[in-house]
Length: 358
Image 1: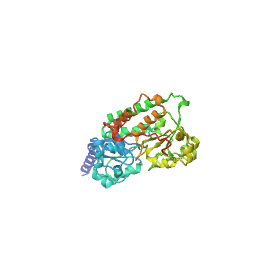
Image 2: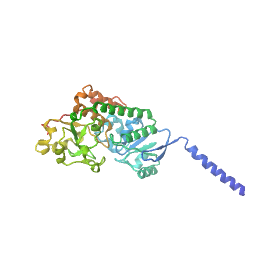
Image 3: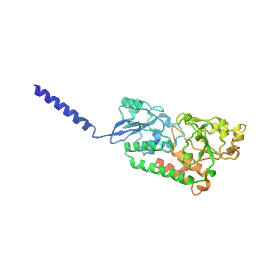
Image 4: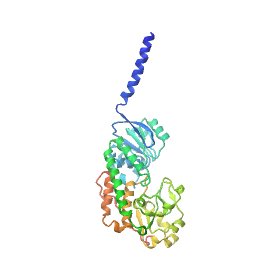
């Protein structure tokens, strides 16, 4: 009897050691952006993206035909990636913005869930609640955390088996940024004007006082951003960075760029009876221009790069007179979305605002 019991125990232990290996032969363990180890199927057919920017990154990385559902907010107008891929709006809704709904997510039956703006605890809780692998990524700042952004690209590419696509996208972005750097890095400091970006959106539209001290297009073009002097403790990439109107008067930049998301508010801020209108040389010299929105449910990376080439052509016309901006914009959008996109489709209407506008 004693030998029989020992034999049974040995058999149970042996089986328990064999089964996990057998069960995981079709699985892959990856480490997400939070350092979590997540087991996923080797073959991924359907994915979803939760919270700000995640769906955009999935589309960049080639997951267009794998999306199983979208958050309700993605149906709202104003998102280029949805306009380019209108059929995505016909997909099942998986819940509200910034996280979806667990029951609706389960109905969509994704193989994995990608999520941004999360914590280890939240990601683990969602994975436990749905029984679906949850992979954290980060929609990092374009200029100051570019490598973190690329790590998220590579993570997505590895999971959905699009590593070649991701590598080519990263190479293109690096090449484009380096081209901007080469064209602008040796321009004499006296020929580099001071610039300011206002109307930057953060969870909604804001006026001239809303800015970005690390605005990527200014960094990519080696341009003097007056707001870069702001104390770092006052800067938030999520809640936004705001200045006093008096500070803008003191800076008095040569060029002012306005994010189109805040244009209507900025128009009131700079109306003809204000001190800003009467004293800012950029307004008096008709050096005020609009740019495409920097943030719309997280960073618009593709349009940020388009903005960089546009403002470079405005600030340094002699150094960019060999560039056809419309063709450059089309190249950027086609590469980011891995598609053939006509720039007329998205109406690339950057504007110079003369002082009669205000």
